[in-house]
Length: 180
Image (tube, rainbow, N blue to C red; front, side, top):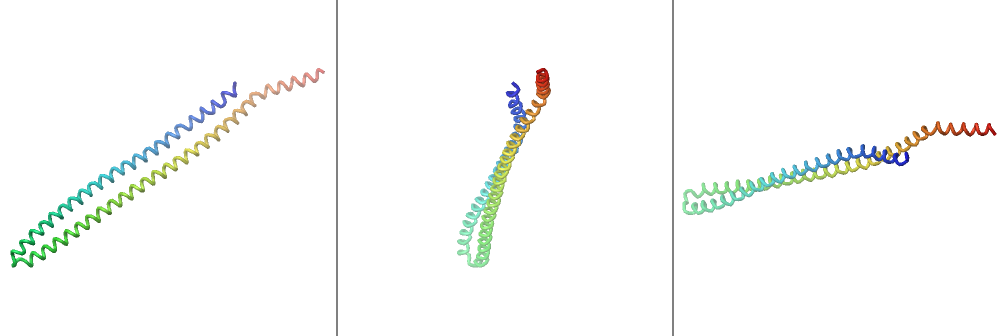
């Protein structure tokens, strides 16, 4: 009867130590995943704002180009102001092109940066999951070693409990031999 209780007691002890450890590790992995999702949402929001800003700048550029066309028509009709308006239009074009180019580069840079951040966060999460998995595998080995140690302790305890009975049997056998 004690042999049946021994594995159950060892299993209960193993489960008592193993389950909280697994829950802690799962909570850590879940937290890391929520952090990555939060960062991804933030990156998507910023990227959307920057894309809207780039589109607004493109619309402004189109409006400015339309305005430039109207001004060019006025230049043809006004020869006296022709040189001044031409210089002004060239400056507008340069500013518009540079602004548009700068905005597009800025948008690309921000998208690239946040893309890299998201990739790093994903890689960090995967590494954390791998570490957690390794720790869980290590805890399994620890539980197996603890079970083995517990079984050996139970055997030693049983031997200790059986020692008086074994001594009594030996004494009876010795008395039996003396009586012969």
